[in-house]
Length: 254
Image (cartoon, rainbow, N blue to C red; front, top):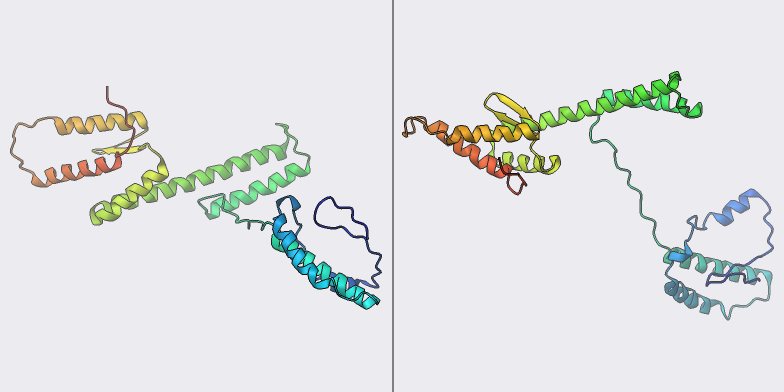
């Protein structure tokens, strides 16, 4: 027995012959296949387990080959169990989808992109503008990204349509959807409908707000509310706008 280790686990060299592959498989089938990272092992727990188990073999007889084999098997068993017990458990890898959207067109574009990428790698990843495979790789990559953008746009449009449909049907659900949409889209309102005009972009949205409230603040010739339904609609829009811009950093109008 030769102790060549500088830490608690002991390395032993034993001359032992294995007759055939079947015996080898039977001997190793119960062994652990997980590599133990000794720098992350709980050494104190390892020492406690090995000390407790080693006391049980101190008085075992070692007069015959069978007795020595039995002792070595027990030593191997509790060393293996101690290492597996004290080793840090490797966290399970949970693969997450890289795309939030999927469609048959995206799948087709992805397959094409992978096909030409494999051919490009096989050629040695040549970045020559005149190379046909390199050009096909760039084209398929561009097409794949375009299909993803199209599907994302469809999802956003569906969300907007659902919000507008629930506006008059379910007020509670409408506010929930607005809140979810606000979390997913960031701090900026990208689209604003002023009358029959849809304004997009930060500057256009700000101008739309100015125009909308300028129209609301313009006094009418008659102070009598002839259209009570319109007045209620205006108050309802004020509540919705207040909810949408709450806690937002909106610069003052100049």
